Image (cartoon, rainbow, N blue to C red; front, side, top):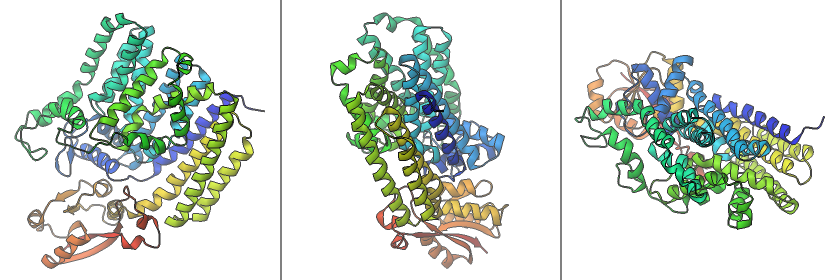
Length: 545
Protein backbone atom coordinates (compact mmCIF):
# COMPACT_ATOMS: atom_id res chain seq x y z
CA UNK A 1 0.00 0.00 0.00
CA UNK A 2 1.37 3.41 -1.00
CA UNK A 3 2.05 5.75 1.89
CA UNK A 4 0.39 9.14 2.00
CA UNK A 5 2.76 12.11 2.07
CA UNK A 6 2.28 12.83 5.79
CA UNK A 7 2.65 9.16 6.73
CA UNK A 8 5.91 9.01 4.77
CA UNK A 9 7.28 11.98 6.72
CA UNK A 10 6.16 10.46 10.02
CA UNK A 11 7.83 7.15 9.14
CA UNK A 12 11.05 8.97 8.25
CA UNK A 13 10.96 10.89 11.57
CA UNK A 14 10.59 7.59 13.47
CA UNK A 15 13.49 6.09 11.48
CA UNK A 16 15.72 9.09 12.23
CA UNK A 17 14.83 8.90 15.95
CA UNK A 18 15.78 5.22 16.11
CA UNK A 19 19.11 5.79 14.34
CA UNK A 20 19.82 8.86 16.52
CA UNK A 21 19.45 6.68 19.63
CA UNK A 22 22.66 4.87 18.62
CA UNK A 23 24.55 7.96 19.81
CA UNK A 24 23.44 7.21 23.39
CA UNK A 25 25.91 4.33 23.47
CA UNK A 26 28.92 6.22 22.11
CA UNK A 27 31.68 7.56 24.34
CA UNK A 28 32.18 11.10 25.64
CA UNK A 29 34.23 13.64 23.73
CA UNK A 30 36.51 16.30 25.15
CA UNK A 31 36.47 19.12 25.91
CA UNK A 32 32.90 20.20 26.79
CA UNK A 33 31.03 16.88 26.86
CA UNK A 34 33.56 15.22 29.18
CA UNK A 35 33.82 18.39 31.28
CA UNK A 36 30.06 18.60 31.88
CA UNK A 37 29.79 14.87 32.60
CA UNK A 38 32.63 15.09 35.12
CA UNK A 39 31.09 18.06 36.94
CA UNK A 40 27.82 16.13 37.27
CA UNK A 41 29.76 13.05 38.45
CA UNK A 42 31.45 15.13 41.16
CA UNK A 43 28.04 16.49 42.16
CA UNK A 44 26.79 12.95 42.78
CA UNK A 45 29.98 11.69 44.48
CA UNK A 46 29.98 14.63 46.89
CA UNK A 47 26.19 14.57 47.18
CA UNK A 48 26.39 18.34 46.75
CA UNK A 49 23.79 19.83 44.41
CA UNK A 50 24.63 23.46 45.16
CA UNK A 51 28.35 23.84 44.46
CA UNK A 52 29.91 23.19 41.06
CA UNK A 53 33.47 21.85 41.12
CA UNK A 54 35.91 21.12 38.33
CA UNK A 55 39.36 19.61 38.90
CA UNK A 56 39.00 20.20 42.62
CA UNK A 57 38.22 23.92 42.37
CA UNK A 58 35.08 26.06 42.39
CA UNK A 59 33.77 26.42 38.85
CA UNK A 60 31.88 29.43 37.50
CA UNK A 61 30.90 29.41 33.85
CA UNK A 62 27.59 27.70 33.02
CA UNK A 63 24.41 27.66 35.14
CA UNK A 64 23.39 24.52 37.03
CA UNK A 65 20.51 22.89 35.16
CA UNK A 66 22.64 20.90 32.69
CA UNK A 67 24.45 19.32 35.62
CA UNK A 68 21.32 18.80 37.71
CA UNK A 69 19.70 16.89 34.85
CA UNK A 70 22.79 14.73 34.27
CA UNK A 71 23.24 14.12 38.01
CA UNK A 72 19.59 13.11 38.40
CA UNK A 73 20.05 10.65 35.55
CA UNK A 74 23.19 9.27 37.27
CA UNK A 75 21.14 8.73 40.41
CA UNK A 76 18.62 6.65 38.46
CA UNK A 77 20.86 4.74 36.04
CA UNK A 78 24.29 4.96 37.66
CA UNK A 79 27.25 7.06 36.55
CA UNK A 80 27.66 6.19 32.87
CA UNK A 81 27.83 7.75 29.43
CA UNK A 82 24.31 6.54 28.69
CA UNK A 83 22.97 8.26 31.81
CA UNK A 84 24.75 11.49 30.87
CA UNK A 85 23.42 11.54 27.31
CA UNK A 86 19.87 10.36 27.96
CA UNK A 87 18.40 13.67 29.27
CA UNK A 88 19.80 15.51 26.24
CA UNK A 89 18.32 12.90 23.89
CA UNK A 90 14.93 13.31 25.55
CA UNK A 91 15.30 17.09 25.26
CA UNK A 92 15.86 16.62 21.52
CA UNK A 93 12.58 14.70 21.28
CA UNK A 94 10.89 17.47 23.28
CA UNK A 95 12.25 20.03 20.80
CA UNK A 96 10.81 18.02 17.90
CA UNK A 97 7.42 17.77 19.60
CA UNK A 98 7.15 21.49 20.31
CA UNK A 99 8.48 22.35 16.86
CA UNK A 100 5.68 20.21 15.42
CA UNK A 101 3.01 21.84 17.60
CA UNK A 102 4.20 25.37 16.88
CA UNK A 103 4.53 24.90 13.12
CA UNK A 104 1.16 23.15 12.88
CA UNK A 105 -0.50 25.99 14.82
CA UNK A 106 0.79 28.58 12.31
CA UNK A 107 0.85 26.54 9.09
CA UNK A 108 -0.46 22.97 8.76
CA UNK A 109 0.42 19.37 9.59
CA UNK A 110 2.44 18.78 6.42
CA UNK A 111 4.68 21.80 7.02
CA UNK A 112 5.01 20.77 10.67
CA UNK A 113 6.18 17.25 9.81
CA UNK A 114 8.64 18.55 7.22
CA UNK A 115 10.06 21.08 9.69
CA UNK A 116 10.63 18.33 12.29
CA UNK A 117 12.31 16.17 9.66
CA UNK A 118 14.59 19.03 8.60
CA UNK A 119 15.50 19.89 12.20
CA UNK A 120 16.20 16.31 13.28
CA UNK A 121 18.44 15.59 10.27
CA UNK A 122 20.52 18.81 10.27
CA UNK A 123 24.22 18.00 10.60
CA UNK A 124 24.86 19.96 13.77
CA UNK A 125 22.02 18.24 15.61
CA UNK A 126 23.48 14.90 14.47
CA UNK A 127 26.85 15.95 15.93
CA UNK A 128 25.24 17.29 19.12
CA UNK A 129 23.40 14.01 19.67
CA UNK A 130 26.78 12.32 20.05
CA UNK A 131 28.92 15.11 21.50
CA UNK A 132 26.41 16.19 24.14
CA UNK A 133 26.80 19.69 25.56
CA UNK A 134 24.08 22.14 26.59
CA UNK A 135 22.73 23.34 23.25
CA UNK A 136 20.07 20.65 22.71
CA UNK A 137 18.57 21.55 26.10
CA UNK A 138 18.48 25.26 25.27
CA UNK A 139 16.94 24.61 21.86
CA UNK A 140 14.19 22.45 23.35
CA UNK A 141 13.34 24.87 26.15
CA UNK A 142 13.35 27.92 23.86
CA UNK A 143 11.01 26.44 21.23
CA UNK A 144 8.75 25.09 24.02
CA UNK A 145 8.61 28.55 25.59
CA UNK A 146 7.84 30.21 22.24
CA UNK A 147 5.00 27.74 21.58
CA UNK A 148 3.37 28.26 24.98
CA UNK A 149 3.65 32.05 24.74
CA UNK A 150 2.12 31.86 21.26
CA UNK A 151 -0.81 29.90 22.67
CA UNK A 152 -1.02 32.32 25.62
CA UNK A 153 -1.35 35.13 23.08
CA UNK A 154 -4.52 33.46 21.83
CA UNK A 155 -5.86 31.29 24.61
CA UNK A 156 -5.66 30.35 28.29
CA UNK A 157 -3.45 31.79 31.01
CA UNK A 158 -1.87 28.46 31.94
CA UNK A 159 0.28 28.78 28.82
CA UNK A 160 1.90 31.83 30.43
CA UNK A 161 2.96 29.61 33.34
CA UNK A 162 4.25 26.85 31.02
CA UNK A 163 6.04 29.34 28.74
CA UNK A 164 7.71 31.03 31.69
CA UNK A 165 8.77 27.68 33.15
CA UNK A 166 10.50 26.64 29.93
CA UNK A 167 12.06 30.09 29.49
CA UNK A 168 13.45 29.81 33.03
CA UNK A 169 14.82 26.34 32.22
CA UNK A 170 16.60 27.79 29.17
CA UNK A 171 18.09 30.55 31.35
CA UNK A 172 19.28 27.96 33.89
CA UNK A 173 21.06 26.18 31.04
CA UNK A 174 22.76 29.13 29.35
CA UNK A 175 21.84 32.53 30.81
CA UNK A 176 19.44 35.42 30.27
CA UNK A 177 20.41 35.98 26.61
CA UNK A 178 18.07 33.11 25.70
CA UNK A 179 15.16 35.49 26.30
CA UNK A 180 16.13 37.24 23.04
CA UNK A 181 14.97 34.40 20.73
CA UNK A 182 11.99 33.79 23.03
CA UNK A 183 10.56 37.33 23.08
CA UNK A 184 12.01 39.21 20.10
CA UNK A 185 9.71 37.56 17.59
CA UNK A 186 6.64 38.54 19.59
CA UNK A 187 7.78 42.13 20.08
CA UNK A 188 8.39 42.64 16.36
CA UNK A 189 5.15 40.83 15.47
CA UNK A 190 3.11 43.10 17.74
CA UNK A 191 4.79 46.18 16.31
CA UNK A 192 4.32 45.17 12.66
CA UNK A 193 0.72 44.02 13.16
CA UNK A 194 0.00 47.16 15.25
CA UNK A 195 -1.09 45.18 18.30
CA UNK A 196 0.35 47.84 20.59
CA UNK A 197 -1.94 46.92 23.47
CA UNK A 198 -0.05 43.65 23.91
CA UNK A 199 2.97 45.54 25.25
CA UNK A 200 0.99 46.69 28.27
CA UNK A 201 -1.05 43.56 29.01
CA UNK A 202 -0.51 42.33 32.58
CA UNK A 203 -0.04 38.70 31.51
CA UNK A 204 3.29 39.47 29.79
CA UNK A 205 4.61 41.30 32.83
CA UNK A 206 3.41 38.41 34.97
CA UNK A 207 5.35 36.12 32.60
CA UNK A 208 8.56 38.02 33.37
CA UNK A 209 7.82 37.80 37.09
CA UNK A 210 7.23 34.05 36.84
CA UNK A 211 10.53 33.59 34.98
CA UNK A 212 12.33 35.30 37.84
CA UNK A 213 10.54 33.07 40.37
CA UNK A 214 11.40 29.91 38.41
CA UNK A 215 15.12 30.77 38.23
CA UNK A 216 15.44 31.23 42.00
CA UNK A 217 17.12 27.79 42.42
CA UNK A 218 19.95 29.03 40.19
CA UNK A 219 20.15 32.38 41.98
CA UNK A 220 20.27 30.64 45.36
CA UNK A 221 22.99 28.18 44.29
CA UNK A 222 25.22 30.94 42.88
CA UNK A 223 24.72 33.12 45.95
CA UNK A 224 25.63 30.30 48.33
CA UNK A 225 28.71 29.17 46.40
CA UNK A 226 30.20 32.55 45.48
CA UNK A 227 28.53 35.68 46.87
CA UNK A 228 28.60 34.32 50.43
CA UNK A 229 32.30 33.53 50.01
CA UNK A 230 34.16 36.54 48.57
CA UNK A 231 37.41 34.99 49.80
CA UNK A 232 37.25 32.33 47.05
CA UNK A 233 39.62 32.77 44.14
CA UNK A 234 37.77 32.63 40.81
CA UNK A 235 39.21 33.76 37.47
CA UNK A 236 42.42 34.50 39.37
CA UNK A 237 40.84 37.05 41.72
CA UNK A 238 38.80 37.30 44.92
CA UNK A 239 35.42 38.91 45.48
CA UNK A 240 33.86 37.46 42.33
CA UNK A 241 30.05 37.59 42.44
CA UNK A 242 28.28 34.57 41.01
CA UNK A 243 25.11 36.62 40.55
CA UNK A 244 26.91 39.39 38.66
CA UNK A 245 28.56 36.80 36.42
CA UNK A 246 25.20 35.12 35.78
CA UNK A 247 23.28 38.29 34.95
CA UNK A 248 26.04 40.27 33.23
CA UNK A 249 29.54 38.89 32.63
CA UNK A 250 28.55 35.52 31.19
CA UNK A 251 26.21 37.18 28.67
CA UNK A 252 26.80 40.90 28.07
CA UNK A 253 30.43 40.54 29.10
CA UNK A 254 31.00 38.00 26.35
CA UNK A 255 29.05 40.04 23.81
CA UNK A 256 31.08 43.20 24.52
CA UNK A 257 34.24 41.16 25.26
CA UNK A 258 34.52 42.86 28.66
CA UNK A 259 34.02 39.83 30.92
CA UNK A 260 36.56 37.38 32.34
CA UNK A 261 36.02 34.98 29.41
CA UNK A 262 36.95 36.60 26.10
CA UNK A 263 36.90 35.68 22.42
CA UNK A 264 37.47 37.06 18.92
CA UNK A 265 34.42 37.77 16.80
CA UNK A 266 34.01 37.53 13.03
CA UNK A 267 30.79 39.01 11.64
CA UNK A 268 30.68 36.39 8.84
CA UNK A 269 31.34 33.43 11.16
CA UNK A 270 27.77 32.12 11.40
CA UNK A 271 27.09 32.71 7.71
CA UNK A 272 29.64 30.09 6.68
CA UNK A 273 29.01 27.98 9.80
CA UNK A 274 25.36 27.59 8.79
CA UNK A 275 26.44 26.35 5.35
CA UNK A 276 27.88 23.16 6.82
CA UNK A 277 25.99 22.99 10.15
CA UNK A 278 22.55 22.98 8.49
CA UNK A 279 23.44 20.41 5.82
CA UNK A 280 21.77 18.89 3.86
CA UNK A 281 19.28 21.78 4.01
CA UNK A 282 21.53 24.86 3.93
CA UNK A 283 21.08 25.63 0.21
CA UNK A 284 17.31 25.41 0.57
CA UNK A 285 17.44 27.55 3.72
CA UNK A 286 19.51 30.34 2.20
CA UNK A 287 17.25 30.37 -0.85
CA UNK A 288 14.20 30.61 1.42
CA UNK A 289 15.76 33.59 3.20
CA UNK A 290 16.61 35.26 -0.11
CA UNK A 291 13.00 34.85 -1.25
CA UNK A 292 11.75 36.74 1.81
CA UNK A 293 13.22 39.90 0.31
CA UNK A 294 10.37 39.92 -2.24
CA UNK A 295 7.15 41.39 -0.85
CA UNK A 296 5.09 38.88 -2.84
CA UNK A 297 6.71 36.00 -0.98
CA UNK A 298 6.30 37.69 2.42
CA UNK A 299 2.60 38.21 1.70
CA UNK A 300 2.19 34.43 1.29
CA UNK A 301 3.42 33.84 4.85
CA UNK A 302 0.86 34.01 7.69
CA UNK A 303 1.24 37.18 9.76
CA UNK A 304 2.25 35.06 12.77
CA UNK A 305 5.21 33.86 10.70
CA UNK A 306 6.89 37.12 11.69
CA UNK A 307 7.42 35.57 15.13
CA UNK A 308 9.60 32.91 13.50
CA UNK A 309 11.79 34.88 11.13
CA UNK A 310 12.16 37.87 13.48
CA UNK A 311 13.31 35.59 16.31
CA UNK A 312 15.83 33.91 13.99
CA UNK A 313 17.06 37.14 12.40
CA UNK A 314 17.68 39.11 15.59
CA UNK A 315 19.35 36.13 17.29
CA UNK A 316 21.52 35.49 14.24
CA UNK A 317 22.64 39.13 14.14
CA UNK A 318 23.45 39.13 17.86
CA UNK A 319 25.48 35.92 17.46
CA UNK A 320 27.30 37.43 14.47
CA UNK A 321 28.23 40.70 16.18
CA UNK A 322 29.22 39.01 19.43
CA UNK A 323 32.93 38.83 20.22
CA UNK A 324 32.55 35.29 21.60
CA UNK A 325 31.51 32.79 18.92
CA UNK A 326 31.33 29.00 18.82
CA UNK A 327 29.71 26.88 16.06
CA UNK A 328 27.25 25.11 18.36
CA UNK A 329 25.57 28.39 19.35
CA UNK A 330 23.68 28.39 16.05
CA UNK A 331 21.76 25.24 17.05
CA UNK A 332 19.57 27.42 19.28
CA UNK A 333 17.70 28.83 16.24
CA UNK A 334 17.63 25.67 14.11
CA UNK A 335 13.89 25.20 14.84
CA UNK A 336 13.20 28.62 13.27
CA UNK A 337 15.50 27.77 10.34
CA UNK A 338 13.61 24.49 9.89
CA UNK A 339 10.19 26.17 9.84
CA UNK A 340 11.32 28.78 7.29
CA UNK A 341 12.83 26.07 5.08
CA UNK A 342 9.79 23.79 5.36
CA UNK A 343 7.36 26.61 4.59
CA UNK A 344 9.39 27.60 1.53
CA UNK A 345 9.60 24.00 0.32
CA UNK A 346 5.82 23.61 0.60
CA UNK A 347 5.34 26.74 -1.55
CA UNK A 348 7.71 25.62 -4.28
CA UNK A 349 6.31 25.27 -7.77
CA UNK A 350 7.33 22.62 -10.29
CA UNK A 351 10.35 24.51 -11.64
CA UNK A 352 11.78 25.13 -8.17
CA UNK A 353 11.17 21.54 -7.09
CA UNK A 354 13.12 20.25 -10.10
CA UNK A 355 16.05 22.59 -9.32
CA UNK A 356 16.32 21.50 -5.70
CA UNK A 357 15.76 17.88 -6.67
CA UNK A 358 18.98 18.11 -8.70
CA UNK A 359 20.85 20.06 -6.01
CA UNK A 360 19.99 17.54 -3.27
CA UNK A 361 20.99 14.64 -5.53
CA UNK A 362 24.36 16.24 -6.22
CA UNK A 363 24.82 16.85 -2.48
CA UNK A 364 24.07 13.18 -1.78
CA UNK A 365 26.69 12.06 -4.30
CA UNK A 366 29.36 14.54 -3.13
CA UNK A 367 28.89 13.77 0.57
CA UNK A 368 28.89 10.00 -0.04
CA UNK A 369 32.16 10.25 -2.01
CA UNK A 370 33.64 12.49 0.70
CA UNK A 371 32.69 10.13 3.54
CA UNK A 372 33.98 7.10 1.62
CA UNK A 373 37.29 8.92 1.02
CA UNK A 374 37.61 9.80 4.71
CA UNK A 375 36.89 6.17 5.63
CA UNK A 376 39.83 5.03 3.48
CA UNK A 377 42.17 7.90 4.34
CA UNK A 378 41.53 7.74 8.10
CA UNK A 379 41.52 3.96 8.08
CA UNK A 380 38.34 3.44 10.13
CA UNK A 381 37.62 -0.10 11.36
CA UNK A 382 35.94 -2.21 8.66
CA UNK A 383 36.35 0.48 5.96
CA UNK A 384 34.72 -1.58 3.23
CA UNK A 385 31.67 -2.28 5.40
CA UNK A 386 31.47 1.47 6.00
CA UNK A 387 31.74 2.31 2.30
CA UNK A 388 29.34 -0.49 1.37
CA UNK A 389 26.75 0.90 3.82
CA UNK A 390 27.08 4.39 2.35
CA UNK A 391 26.65 3.10 -1.19
CA UNK A 392 23.71 0.91 -0.14
CA UNK A 393 21.80 3.89 1.29
CA UNK A 394 22.65 5.97 -1.78
CA UNK A 395 21.33 3.31 -4.16
CA UNK A 396 18.32 2.57 -1.94
CA UNK A 397 17.28 6.22 -1.91
CA UNK A 398 17.43 6.44 -5.71
CA UNK A 399 15.55 3.15 -6.18
CA UNK A 400 12.75 3.79 -3.68
CA UNK A 401 12.19 7.50 -4.35
CA UNK A 402 12.03 8.66 -7.94
CA UNK A 403 11.03 11.78 -9.80
CA UNK A 404 11.19 15.43 -8.76
CA UNK A 405 8.78 16.04 -5.88
CA UNK A 406 8.85 17.36 -2.34
CA UNK A 407 8.51 13.78 -1.05
CA UNK A 408 11.57 12.65 -3.01
CA UNK A 409 13.63 15.62 -1.87
CA UNK A 410 12.70 14.95 1.77
CA UNK A 411 13.21 11.18 1.59
CA UNK A 412 16.56 11.27 -0.19
CA UNK A 413 17.89 14.05 2.03
CA UNK A 414 16.78 12.14 5.13
CA UNK A 415 18.57 9.01 3.96
CA UNK A 416 21.65 11.14 3.33
CA UNK A 417 21.49 12.31 6.95
CA UNK A 418 21.08 8.72 8.12
CA UNK A 419 24.23 7.90 6.11
CA UNK A 420 26.00 10.67 8.02
CA UNK A 421 24.73 9.33 11.35
CA UNK A 422 25.86 5.80 10.56
CA UNK A 423 29.27 6.98 9.39
CA UNK A 424 29.87 9.18 12.43
CA UNK A 425 28.30 7.06 15.18
CA UNK A 426 29.47 3.61 14.08
CA UNK A 427 32.74 4.19 12.26
CA UNK A 428 34.39 7.62 12.45
CA UNK A 429 33.81 8.69 16.07
CA UNK A 430 34.77 5.27 17.55
CA UNK A 431 38.01 5.36 15.52
CA UNK A 432 38.65 8.98 16.52
CA UNK A 433 38.10 8.27 20.21
CA UNK A 434 40.94 5.73 20.18
CA UNK A 435 43.16 8.82 20.38
CA UNK A 436 41.41 10.36 23.38
CA UNK A 437 44.04 9.28 25.88
CA UNK A 438 42.17 10.37 29.01
CA UNK A 439 39.16 8.24 28.14
CA UNK A 440 41.27 5.20 27.26
CA UNK A 441 43.37 5.54 30.42
CA UNK A 442 40.35 6.02 32.67
CA UNK A 443 38.56 2.97 31.26
CA UNK A 444 41.71 0.84 31.54
CA UNK A 445 42.23 1.91 35.15
CA UNK A 446 38.58 1.18 35.98
CA UNK A 447 38.97 -2.34 34.58
CA UNK A 448 42.42 -3.17 36.00
CA UNK A 449 42.51 -1.20 39.29
CA UNK A 450 38.86 -0.36 40.10
CA UNK A 451 39.56 0.92 43.63
CA UNK A 452 42.38 3.28 42.66
CA UNK A 453 42.08 7.01 43.37
CA UNK A 454 44.29 8.35 40.59
CA UNK A 455 45.85 11.78 40.13
CA UNK A 456 46.35 13.92 37.04
CA UNK A 457 49.66 15.77 36.88
CA UNK A 458 50.02 19.12 35.10
CA UNK A 459 47.48 18.54 32.36
CA UNK A 460 43.74 18.81 31.90
CA UNK A 461 41.85 15.63 31.05
CA UNK A 462 38.20 15.72 31.99
CA UNK A 463 37.61 12.46 30.13
CA UNK A 464 40.03 10.79 32.55
CA UNK A 465 38.17 12.45 35.42
CA UNK A 466 34.92 10.90 34.23
CA UNK A 467 36.07 7.39 33.27
CA UNK A 468 38.56 6.75 36.08
CA UNK A 469 37.19 5.25 39.31
CA UNK A 470 35.98 7.63 42.02
CA UNK A 471 36.93 11.28 42.26
CA UNK A 472 40.20 12.06 40.50
CA UNK A 473 42.71 14.46 42.07
CA UNK A 474 44.49 17.17 40.07
CA UNK A 475 48.08 18.18 40.78
CA UNK A 476 49.06 21.55 39.34
CA UNK A 477 52.82 21.21 39.97
CA UNK A 478 55.53 19.02 41.51
CA UNK A 479 55.11 20.65 44.92
CA UNK A 480 51.56 19.32 44.99
CA UNK A 481 52.89 15.90 43.95
CA UNK A 482 55.51 16.01 46.71
CA UNK A 483 52.76 16.45 49.30
CA UNK A 484 50.91 13.43 47.92
CA UNK A 485 53.84 11.10 47.28
CA UNK A 486 53.67 9.57 50.74
CA UNK A 487 50.71 7.58 49.48
CA UNK A 488 52.35 4.32 48.47
CA UNK A 489 51.60 3.11 44.98
CA UNK A 490 49.96 6.35 43.88
CA UNK A 491 48.83 6.24 40.23
CA UNK A 492 49.37 9.37 38.16
CA UNK A 493 48.22 10.24 34.64
CA UNK A 494 50.89 12.30 32.88
CA UNK A 495 51.80 13.58 29.41
CA UNK A 496 55.07 12.34 27.92
CA UNK A 497 56.95 15.60 28.61
CA UNK A 498 56.12 15.43 32.32
CA UNK A 499 56.96 11.74 32.54
CA UNK A 500 60.49 12.53 31.34
CA UNK A 501 60.85 14.85 34.34
CA UNK A 502 58.96 12.61 36.74
CA UNK A 503 61.21 9.57 36.25
CA UNK A 504 64.28 11.64 37.16
CA UNK A 505 62.75 12.56 40.54
CA UNK A 506 60.82 9.44 41.57
CA UNK A 507 60.96 5.74 40.99
CA UNK A 508 58.06 5.51 38.53
CA UNK A 509 56.68 2.39 36.90
CA UNK A 510 54.74 2.70 33.64
CA UNK A 511 51.45 0.83 33.88
CA UNK A 512 50.19 1.65 30.40
CA UNK A 513 50.80 4.16 27.59
CA UNK A 514 48.11 5.81 25.43
CA UNK A 515 48.10 7.66 22.12
CA UNK A 516 46.74 11.20 22.16
CA UNK A 517 45.53 13.82 19.70
CA UNK A 518 43.23 16.82 20.21
CA UNK A 519 40.38 15.13 18.33
CA UNK A 520 38.11 18.18 18.06
CA UNK A 521 40.82 20.05 16.12
CA UNK A 522 41.46 17.70 13.23
CA UNK A 523 44.44 18.24 10.91
CA UNK A 524 45.27 16.65 7.53
CA UNK A 525 48.33 14.87 8.93
CA UNK A 526 46.20 13.25 11.62
CA UNK A 527 43.40 12.29 9.24
CA UNK A 528 45.90 10.61 6.92
CA UNK A 529 46.66 7.18 8.32
CA UNK A 530 50.16 7.21 6.83
CA UNK A 531 51.25 10.51 8.47
CA UNK A 532 49.33 10.22 11.74
CA UNK A 533 52.28 9.13 13.85
CA UNK A 534 53.97 12.45 13.09
CA UNK A 535 51.41 14.34 15.18
CA UNK A 536 50.49 11.77 17.84
CA UNK A 537 51.46 12.53 21.44
CA UNK A 538 51.73 10.03 24.26
CA UNK A 539 50.30 9.88 27.77
CA UNK A 540 51.17 7.46 30.56
CA UNK A 541 49.57 5.92 33.60
CA UNK A 542 52.42 5.75 36.09
CA UNK A 543 52.69 4.21 39.56
CA UNK A 544 54.93 6.10 41.99
CA UNK A 545 56.79 3.42 43.99
